[in-house]
Length: 196
Image (cartoon, rainbow, N blue to C red):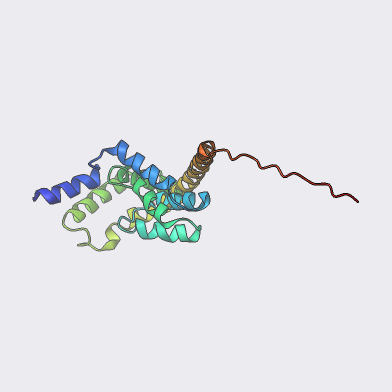
């Protein structure tokens, strides 16, 4: 494998600047957007919410659609999709499956379902769609059902938090700029009384 390809894969999994600096960079990008607090919050929340669904490769598009529907900022939606990444997808998809299984009355994986999952895993090892989409449809459907309430929850949490942070950041910046502005002396106008 070439060094360039390896570096691209590594940077997608773990940014070269490190996660802390990368998170700080994204936070600054969000704060400096020239949109309303609602638009920024709705955009970030849209990108984060669609990450709950097992639709890898469509998250940017779905984030843009949801941001458009909620009058969110598209750049903020793209930044919000970073919430879903190779490190967090296993957690999100496991949570989506667990919630979907609970909502559909599944009650966990039974012995027969375990055997079916093992057979499905063996089929998938020969090729993802060699047995057709019906082999993975039950799991996919359960994850989509479970992803919906999680997406709603994530949207709400991200919207409230990002809107509060953006509003507070802008108020602090306005106060800081007001303190830096030189105070202009008030000009007094002398009123002349005209004799009657």
